[in-house]
Image (tube, rainbow, N blue to C red; front, top):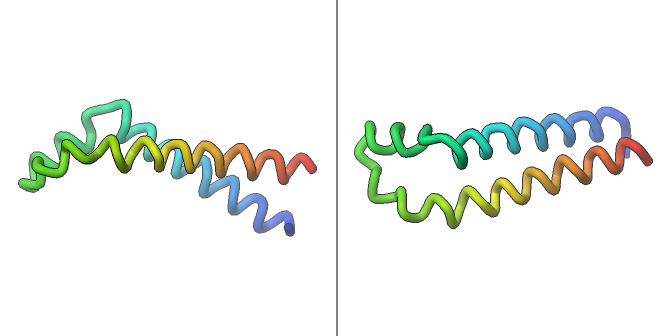
Length: 69
């Protein structure tokens, strides 16, 4: 894997982890979805956000591991 792809993969992993963590651990999505009238979706957020957080953390770890190798 080239250095450019490795750096891009790391950037995507870090940004995705930060955004997903922000949505998981703060009421950001609750406020936004309530403001636009989509509060019925709130019950399903854990089924989407927690796997997405695990995916982006794994992607970040993989990118760091590939960069070190």
